[in-house]
Amino acid sequence: MPVNERGGRWLMGILLGQKFVEQERITEEQLAKALERQRRHGGRLGENLVALGFAAPDDVDAFFRRTPPPVKSIGETGLNLSFLCDLILKHSLNMVEFSIPELSSRIKLPPTIIDAAVEDLRKEQMAEAKSAGTLSKLTYRFALTDRGRQEAGQLMGQCRYAGPAPVTFQDYRTMVLAQTIKSIVVRDDTVRKAFAHLVIGEDMLSRVGPAVSSGKSIFLYGPPGNGKTTIAETIGNILPGEIFVPYAVLVDSEIITLYDPMTHHATGEKGTDQDWDQRWVKVRRPMVMVGGELTLHHLDLDFNQITKFYEAPFQMKANNGLLIIDDFGRQRVEPQYLINRLIIPLERRTDFLTFHTGMKFEIPFDQLVIFSTNLDPKELVDEAFLRRIRYKIKIDHPTREEYSTIFKRMCEANRVEFDQEALDFLIAYYYERLGISLSACHPRDLIDNLVDQAHYAGLPRKLTRETISQSWESYFVEI
Image (cartoon, rainbow, N blue to C red):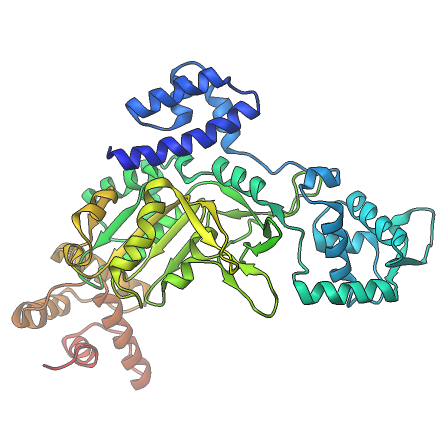
């Protein structure tokens, strides 16, 4: 293992180990011995703790299946009363009246905590009770006073965030470490099942599986149109387990929104405030894909000048999941600049973000990163960078047998009557005669054209010399 890669894993081991110690699962002395063993022999911290007899496998597994504990008091949220009161004021500004359960649903904190904050607002004469149907305060209707509306308006001028209460950065960091991509285990049968819809060789499967299970970065390269992006997306679908993602994170006094429904696909398991802290959403491990639109700006915080709060960048949204940098080398930034931006996070598994004020802070960089390119890797990056990418997998042109299998599958999927003689004609007359390489995407595209032609002419979907020739001539540019 390269020194810097091992060093990055060892640093993560220190952070994880500190959490084990805080939870009194191990002692400081045991942690030191496990880290020393990890530094000498490699592997994951949990594996070394088990090997030394300092932890049981079930204890390690339980740590990596961590659930955000329910919060029962303002102190347990990590937020102060003043912050919660301000958030309630902003939520209430456009509500004629509100109840404690309504605010609880919006802010994602238990009614008892919301009640304490509303009571403080009443003492400060910023909120008042409008009606009380029973003795239970949960049925009370409240409204802001003139003073409360004035204060809420001023708060909106400073920051317009009025969503679920954020979690503290320390709590976020702890959860990312507990849910690390390094803890996943991917088995051979899972990989084979996931890739069953693709025509992929045995050698390729035997390389993809260990690469995914390692949690290390992967470099997919090869000629265009042969499935690199599809393979990368399939890898995202086989990442096991679910994780928790917060709606927002509070760093000092700044709010960063993190949960993104376009990226984080909720499992549908809502739970209650008795099951886990509702400021977290249970999602499948995320898969974030960026392509030619990627710039260095996208890798830093996005500050909205109007709303006065931040949106997390791609790599923060991808934590505990997969980040695919597709069409690497075709971004709107020189490859070397992008490499320089990512090389330290890839090594140390931490990244630095910057607020618009200039203040920097460190975040976990915990994701499986896949670079995918059609270009020659040696022309894109230097040997030092390639050395840091542990797995390099070439996705080459399909063999004739693989091409034929793909073609038959496409015919079947599109209800096209297959004819072997027409396929042999296609390969001999066009590919071999013109010296064109077989590509995995061609069967799909040629059959799509054939279906379009049949639909337009009102004819059966049938593979013949004539129909495949028409499809070919519509698809390729004459030279």
